[in-house]
Length: 326
Image (cartoon, rainbow, N blue to C red; front, side, top):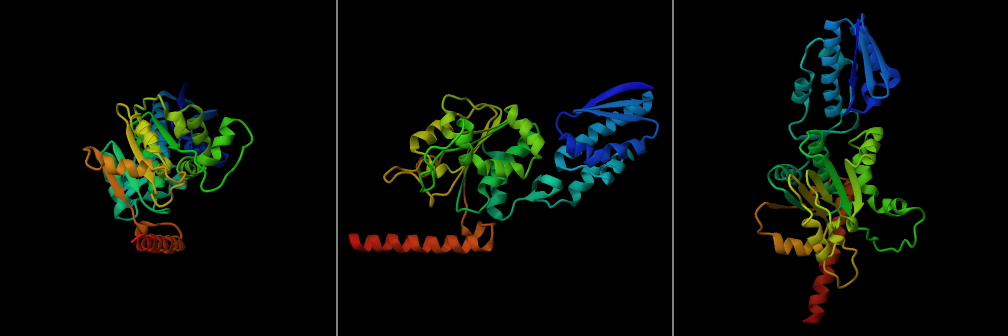
């Protein structure tokens, strides 16, 4: 009997071993002459040489499945040990427009033609603008694409940013350290990540800087290479801030800029950097613009109706203003 070790480098440990280590128990039952011992993220394998090699091979494949599908089940373990190709089977059963798998193996799919186009353009363009109303899935799809690129080792890190602009209200001085003051502005980004990555693994990725969430002001002076960089709520940038952000793009980097030009919270008279970039960069090769409409809204059905009412009111206000001026 020999001793070998396997280190879980990418999978979340709790998700891999299961509740009460049920997955390790399943593996032990499939290899009755071996012993598996867990220490942190290290699995110690005690078995005869041929069986130890089989177990290590199975552990490697199972970790890949756990990372890809965000779950590991008894059926998957049995099929891998028996030599069946679980991953390809699951791929065949998944919808063709699946981007990534969320928590508990839930497939996250592109919904609607504009979301599908956003997925396609991300592959072919290094800078993508996704512009449209609230609820159309711009930010969530952007973060799904970033997490997918990280899992596939296309990039080494994810950087998510937002301008720290209050939405029509003054919050005053917030308590705590710098992180505590800024987190309320960045919470939607944490929420989206929390649907894709198990909490313990997400904490590790944040602590090690593989995933970084920072206000736009902290981007100055950086070169963002080997990363997917997402700027959310870009309508609340100034033209100077937008130029600063876009020029951070480094080698093997991709950027996604999302925003809604109907929800600008900048002071009156300050031009939106998103509008400015749309006007100036529309003809630049390598940059893609996806424009969502209210028909792309995928939240509660009421959201589409609410957006339509506000859009109609804005149009009437503009028309009234034009009539008065004439």
